[in-house]
Length: 108
Image 1 (cartoon, helix red, strand yellow):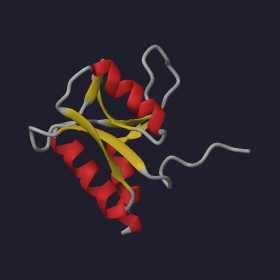
Image 2 (cartoon, helix red, strand yellow):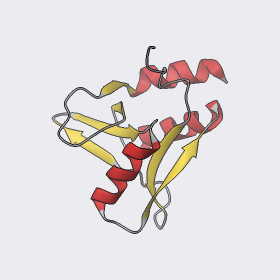
Image 3 (cartoon, helix red, strand yellow):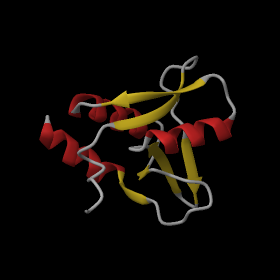
Image 4 (cartoon, rainbow, N blue to C red):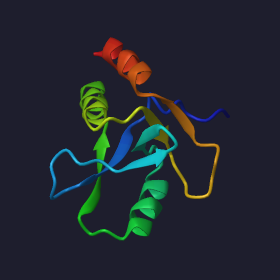
């Protein structure tokens, strides 16, 4: 059975509840990745490893919420979105932010 398409599932994102608009990102070379989790257990492990009590997850289940997240990611200069990041793993799926914004905006 093939893995579900991460664009079509609900998204979990990590944000700082005390600083509006602050999203957790990862920098690698010239790319800044906004993180999206489709697996709640992966999000929980990542959140636990960060050890910051101000951080929490939020579920994005509609195209409108996904569009708002991608817009916010663009405002903080993210260039790509990475799905289901795991520390030490180098094969996480990622996509250009602008490409995803175009895809999501077509769904609105």
